[in-house]
Image 1 (tube, one colour):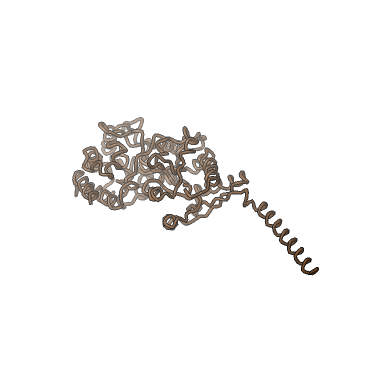
Image 2 (spheres, one colour):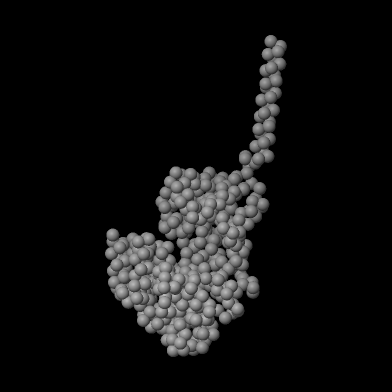
Length: 425
């Protein structure tokens, strides 16, 4: 009995020590106090943008002992497939990178993402509402834009435009046509276009031209059955491509060279203008002797247009969404992270890498003027980009149709009717 008593006493002591040990380990690991959040992203490539994002996460972790964000990077080509698969199985991480429009909608419909309306005011006066709404669905905000991809910028050689009689770049379409005619008279190709892949005339040109004529509600209303592609204003927009082609605004081989070749043509001085997106800013700045020789402008206004001429076609870059199934404490921690992440410091770092941001941040003199002006254009709000809004089938129809217009094989009215027929299928 004495031995049994000693054994029982020893067992109690061991269990007591084990309990103390467990409590001590829990405290040191912080599982009771530290909230860990997993963030899925596609920041695998060695690019300044990705480095900036990862640095912001690291700084947050250093400054917040009670919240730690763990990055899980997945290659871009695999990322969205994995995201959709995990969403279907309701196994999403705490936070995850998302993109606006049709790429975000399925996650919202599946109730996988948390509304950020309770913290949206944190960016009021910092990010324009016209940019924020890219991540808003039915009045709920689901992510904050980190950067912007503009698709409709006009790059031009200042000296060529000046020699053609314009001290400033034209602000109306009628004046742009006068500039094009003047350039043709001097033997200079007005606009370098590389439409071999068929998307530039749609994404770069029609996305903004269409919005200038129809307004930004046209596309969603038409896709919802509340409008038609045979709308007169949309046909007016398509007719601009027809008119510019007929007045020799473009190089003759526009449908056999790609966008990079067209940019090279512009950089070599063989054309006065090149229409492209913000992706061209870096290559252009890296290739010219003096940044001051290059200007950037939005597409001019159209008389009788119903759209906002301050808008430029573009889409908000990847944002970070929050899993709707998080506990209240985890939600609060995720919100603290987002408020820390999307601040001027991050936007300033992106600007240094010549990446367009949704905030009108102050820029130092070492930032090229052409970039500063391009960034300022985004603050007027974003018009929808056609291939980021249309179905893949409709995108193919308009891409091929615009090329057919330049070849004289199709009229604007015929393309509009073809798009409406595809929509009604």
